[in-house]
Image (cartoon, rainbow, N blue to C red):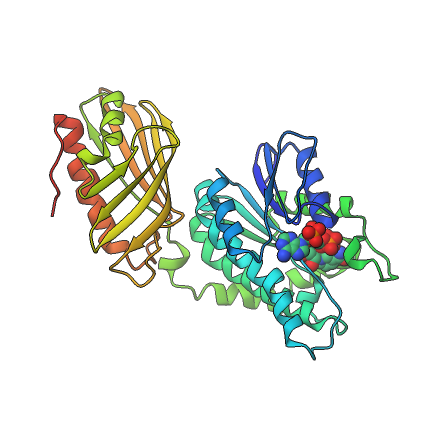
Length: 386
Ligand SMILES: NC(=O)c1ccc[n+]([C@@H]2O[C@H](COP(=O)([O-])OP(=O)(O)OC[C@H]3O[C@@H](n4cnc5c(N)ncnc54)[C@H](OP(=O)(O)O)[C@@H]3O)[C@@H](O)[C@H]2O)c1
């Protein structure tokens, strides 16, 4: 991925490697950089949007996932490293909370956005992920776990068009290595090398002199071959699954008529609809008692062309994970096809692996290809199909 004109979110963007990545992204023409920081942060460049983000805070992760619009690249950079000797389990938990669960939870929350953009994830790891630093076992364990997560996500997300990269960093001159009297790379040089590696599409990026020495051996080694061999065991249905459900139909009416009918949600989506269904920024809920509740925010509304809703809340009573829809996007694209109009419906993030996939995709078939199509054709509100 070349980051010019891309939207990026970087965690721990206020100092160290994260700050250097922020500056390098701006230098290379990123169109927008969400700077995730724990404390208040300001930047003179208008392309920088500060977001409060402690990666161990689930509520903040959720808020960021709601506030961030399109996203091409997630950089999981924030991290901690403390000396320990494995005698304190609390320290192991602390490292895992920031260095493993942080990237894991943030990635899950932002996945619909990244899949939508066919984007990428950069996980800033450490050479300690490959071989433990004995003076920092808790840190090493957390980075090894984050590396395994990176390898797994890489295999899982390829089918959704999301590339997952590991940055295997050696020593860099930041607060983290303040007490170490060893040669260290400059953060700005490292940041540039990370984006160069990303542009070259390297799965594993070795951006400093110490890590670079390992690059060739790692890439051609048995462990890498083993990773690829294991990844190929993933069922094709998962590896190739799109995270989306899509269908399309054509009608004789105009794009404007199709647009009006889509916005008239009560006229085609059976069930109880409450709220504003037609204005950009409006929110509405949809409820079928005992079966389905979801809340949608209108994130795009381009007359005659496009309508998009982000699902901000969901409670599906018929599946184990009742929030399967939460964080997904429902998109209607309208286009002229000769004398006719095509409406393409996509529920982005409605993955075939979801328990609700069969029921939900059947229901969309009846509601969209049935009810909505008839509403556009006749102008008359349609009754519930069940
Ligand atoms: N420096 C190295 O030699 C080296 C080597 C290998 C890997 N790495 C990795 O590179 C990444 C960046 O390290 P660095 O050297 O830039 O470290 P750093 O200078 O200590 O900066 C750490 C950054 O992470 C943020 N952070 C810590 N805990 C956080 C949390 N719970 N939520 C959100 N942000 C949090 C810090 O924010 P605050 O300012 O709020 O504390 C800070 O912005 C880390 O993942 C690190 O493990 C560094």
